[in-house]
Length: 211
Image (tube, rainbow, N blue to C red; front, side):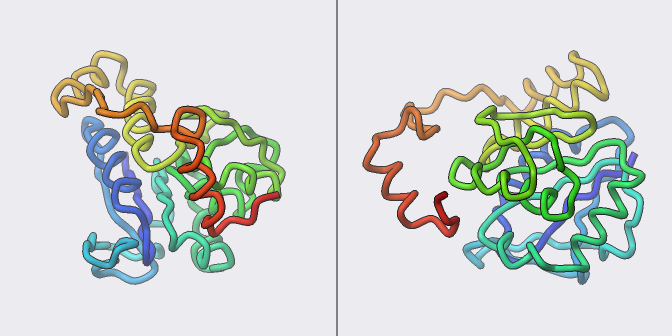
């Protein structure tokens, strides 16, 4: 089984690494980072790079597609090369997945029409523009499409899909070995729980137009 994790300039690192560390532990699977051009691709801060060993053209039929989000997602929304690759890969994929605003790229490619999906809380409403039903759930499975909410939820998405493919015990083993046992010092991980002034500050400065 081949897992293709898409990279593009100014992606969010944990969006890609969360699934890599969980879903990438699928027995016998090959995980590859792919981009339009092979070589290092820098994250949103510019101070970290992951290496795409293969181009999109090199990996036309992955079994699992993982699309991260990040500030660089916005200029990718009309990138015909990427969107065409997503449509082609999706035609034969077993699972097509996203983390954070990566779901907007799947939606822009027309892959989520009429489906339920999630995204970062600041971007949820944008899904409606593409005929997608947004939900506030952390991980959403609709057919072969698995979308995760913001950034850290990619770990949950990876474990969820790992359990579906390899069984609960294997997913539990990966969770144990990675010691994924969240005990955050604050209970502010969603707009429903965070201080209202923080939520409003980020909404006001969001790159997404509030509708």
